[in-house]
Image (cartoon, rainbow, N blue to C red; front, side, top):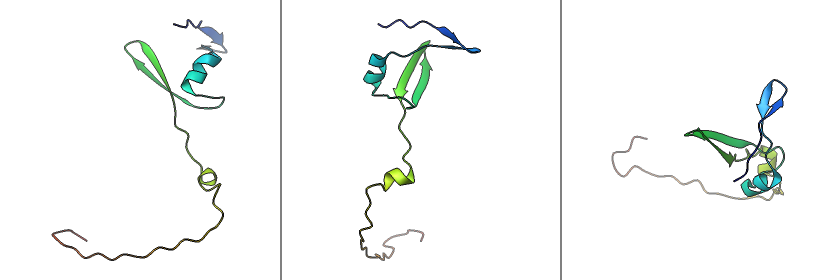
Length: 80
């Protein structure tokens, strides 16, 4: 078990997370952590990063792709 002191930080209180704890969470500088309080315990989990449009298409090199439009007819009582 790791004991962490609660310190003053401006008008707030704070704890510092040791590098070993962040490595265990696979968290790095500027990552977000989710915080839950359950039965007087603090649960920290690494938040999933939101992917930007640029990050999503960073490896896209403008190759073309083709697709076919498929038409379907109702087979039962579907509302189209």
